[in-house]
Image (tube, rainbow, N blue to C red; front, side):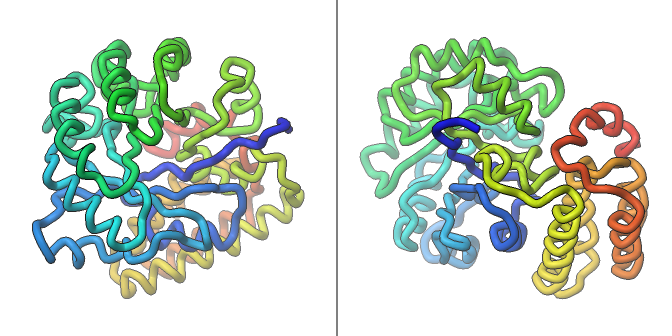
Length: 337
């Protein structure tokens, strides 16, 4: 597709891109170059930290680097986390300054930090000299206004953040509205550190349009697009893929593997069904009738009902992958009514 295939990161989604999801995903699909954990927060002091973040005993899944993410506005907490991750062999941690949810942002964490460059600078001034590994940042353009990031770019440059990933929306937008490419272009003009783009890459067509505007950007973080079509990273890299009917067979195997893995992880507790529904709220968009596919799964309250609903999804509807994205706006209200 392009002379240089994009570098692709799996975006962290709290409650979705869990250890179990990542472990199963990378067994079934190609194209992802780096994995990020959903954020850790409230890191306890001293030895108690080890039990709280036990999954960070590993530094890679299927030989793909795993980057731990922290949500914090406490410099000491970030240093505890960084020290623990370094001791386990990690070479990078990621600072979440992008979480848009009000319960986080209202506490000046996540995207709620973006209007407060002084707070960000004071934390970096304290931790940068002591960090034993690289610190990357994931953020948004701002919480209330896209100009908020302009005050942060010189701070990130000064402290040599290892990489900046920006979701091209405001925190208050959540995931609604358009991405703001002019604001991305403006920040790139002043950025002196590596950059990764995040936001609304759902298909090959989306990526082609993006590259026309930003030919210089070759690193993408993909979340909802990958959760909808797990083949998307391979598609963006131009890797050879089977036809849609065979893709449906492969997705079915992935779904079955994930189901059994979650049942094992949760010891068959009822919350397993809730986690799987969250997963299907994205995957359903890659079928030719998302509302029908998700409707029955959403109503399932038992493993038997879930298995029946999933069997119907694969038997009665067709996988169309990224090509289904034209249905997204039409189907969203139907799925969430």
